[in-house]
Structures are given as structure tokens and as C-alpha cells.
Amino acid sequence: MNARILSGKDIAESIKSEVAADIARLKTEYGFAPCLAVVRVGDDPASAVYVGNKVRTSEEIGLVSEHHHLPENVSRAELVGLVRSLNWREEVDGILVQLPLPDQINEREIIEMIDPDKDVDGFHPVNVGRLSQGEKSLVPCTPAGVIEILKRSEIEIGGKNAVIVGRSNIVGKPMAMLLLQENATVTICHSRTRDLPEMTRRADILVAAIGRPGFIRGEHIGEGATVIDVGINNVSDVDLARDLFGDDEIEKRLAAIEKRGFTLVGDVNPREAKEKAGNFTPVPGGVGLLTVAMLMKNTVEAAKTRRGVE
Ligand code: NDP
Image 1 (tube, rainbow, N blue to C red):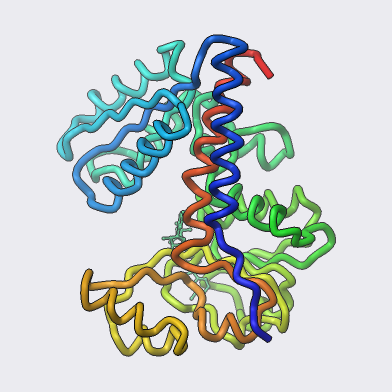
Image 2 (cartoon, protein in one colour):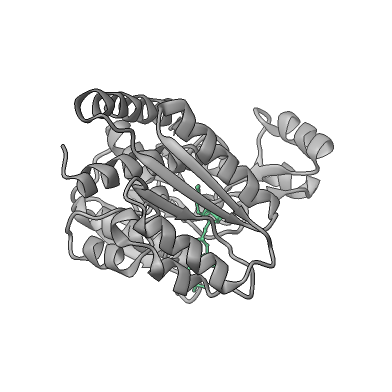
């Protein structure tokens, strides 16, 4: 089998243009543009890239965006003060605190302090509870993006066996809730699951959110399954790269390792997935692109709900 590659690029672009059109309409009809405040603490290079993407995309599609950058040694009181002021400010519709936070800060305390109606990451317990009860809520961006990929690629979810590998609060668990809402029969696997390949081979839809490069191999994939690779890992080992990529990609990947010191790899072995799967999301160029698009969508949804407009 030669899997159909589900590119995230076109889907992310469609979502962003729909959101941009909605923002333009809100400006004309109601005289406001939704506002997203992004808080970054310290100088973690990955966080800087993620926040840069979020702020740039906000500006591209017409959101008002604020970037608050605090030093690595920021005090709890200072960060709490900033989040409180963002909660109070009427014109701020969405608040995103980029994780991870430095050791002196209790992440959970900060997440729980964000006004749930402005919690565009969907990590606040109120939103987690609403999602699990099937109520309208702000949904974590990455799993919401996976649902968009499936729907817009016309892959049926209802009645299908969906298996998720990973049970984190930001991907695995909300992914399970969303697939359940779409009427899939859902199984969640994790590091204590016995005979993982046997479990995952039953999947019509297999979602990998593990954090281990190329972990899901051909033996884990049922013939013709849809394989969604959420993982983002840096691989610098040339032998591992040779195991992960076939003739179609290996030269490009080795060149990336040579030039930048690493190549981006998901949690699925792409060479083997392409042989076994019916549909497959690439890394990069798959789920990752949807995360920012869904953040933009969440900000507009938060603005409409808070301001009572359609
Ligand atoms: P976490 O580390 O929080 O969770 C990993 C999960 O994988 C855990 O539930 C763990 O099980 C499970 N796991 C680890 N080893 C095994 C194993 N050998 N067999 C079965 N399960 C295993 O990771 P995240 O959910 O935060 O992220 C997962 C991946 O997705 C990462 O590569 C991350 O970079 C990427 N990611 C991508 C995003 C995007 O925008 N595309 C956004 C967020 C994350 P247990 O609970 O038992 O320890």
C-alpha cells in the first residue's frame, strides 16, 4: 500500500482564511477585532519560535496581538499580576501562557488562574470538564487540529476504532474526548499498555502522541489505517535517520542534519507507515501546522462568546 499523504498546509491555510474573513466581518459589523495576549517567560529557543509563529500569524489574519516577554527569573507575584491584569482587561479575548514555565513557577497554578472564557489553550480545568461533558468549550489546539484534518480529508470517524498512544493532558486525553464526541470507539494506550502492537493494529484511526522519534512502526499499523503523527522530535543521529526515511526523503534529511544539526521527525516511522497505512500525516507539514491555525480560531470563538455576538 502507498499511503495518501494528508498535508496540513492546505488545511491550515483554509482555516486561517476562514478565520481572517470572520475577523473582517466582526470589524465591520461590531467594530472590534479580537485580541490575543501571549505571555512568554525566559529564553527557551523552542518557545521563542512557537510564540513568534503565534504573534506573526495573529497579525497576518487581522487579530490584535500582544506579546508579553518576562525574564527567566521572574517572580511568581509578577507573573500572577500580569495574568490577573489580562483577565481584567475587557479588550483582551484570549490569553496564552507559553509552556514550559521556569522551575520557580507552579504551572498548574498559573493555568488555573487564567479566566476560563479567555483560556484559548483549553487547559483550564473548567474547559477540560466542559469538554468531557460534551458542552461548548475552548478545546486544546493540537487535538482540535487533528479532528479538522480528519474531517476536511473526508475520513469517516463515526463508528471507527480510534486508538491513541499517549495520555497527556495537552494531547492524548483531549484527543480521546474529541474522537468520542465524533462517535469513534476510543482506546487510549500508554507506557503501561500490554502488547501495544496488538492494540494499535486494530485501529482504523491511529494517533501517535508519544514524544519518541519513529516509535510507531509497521508492526503497529493495520493495513490501510489512517495514521496521525502528532510527534515533533529533533533527530541528529544519521543511522536513525536512515532507518526512518526511504529513498524519496533520505538525502533531504541528511542534508538538514548536516546543515542545522537535526531533522524534524514524528513519533511514527514514516518509511514503514507509508507502506502499511491508507492515510498518513507527514512531519513536518502535518498536524504541527494546524495547532497555530486552531489557536486563531479559538481566539475568535472566545471573543464572540465573551462579547455575546455571533
Ligand atoms: P508527554 O510526554 O506529556 O506524553 C507522552 C505520552 O506517551 C505519555 O502518556 C506516555 O505514557 C506515552 N508513552 C511514552 N512511552 C511510551 C511507550 N513506550 N509506549 C506507549 N506509550 C508511551 O508528551 P505530549 O503529549 O506533550 O507530546 C507528545 C508528542 O507530541 C511530542 O513529540 C510532542 O513534541 C508532540 N506535540 C506536538 C504538538 C504539535 O503542535 N504538533 C503539540 C504538543 C505536543 P505514560 O503516561 O504512561 O508515561
